[in-house]
Image (cartoon, rainbow, N blue to C red; front, side, top):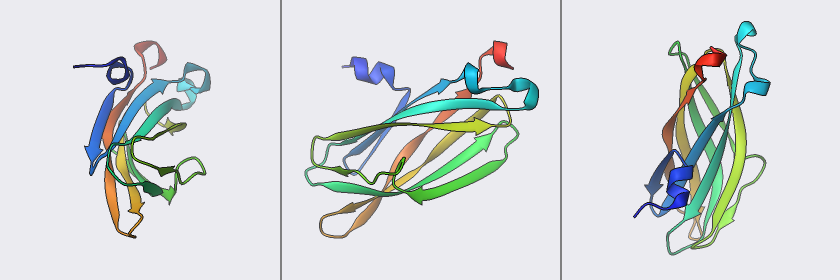
Length: 136
């Protein structure tokens, strides 16, 4: 059964009970194609469908532009937070990504820690960044 939530988010992936949902959005007002700058925001929802609390500690992004150039971005938490998610809880945030091309992809992993100190990597599914034809 498909829910409204599933149709809002473009892609999702579940790893060890943690589901990561992503919805990208092209931002015309922050893009300047004549200067080689295209900008997207992306909304992420992280859901803990497991049976124990998990805390998001770090992120790793692999960002590929339309020319195939790959940039890796690593950091603590997401937008300055390291959310603790109890079973059944979710965390939403919005961030952004500029590219020097009108197309690209993003994907990555979040590192989570459990109460017992063990860690795991949750997949951030690959999603596409495609500017509308009017912005190319």
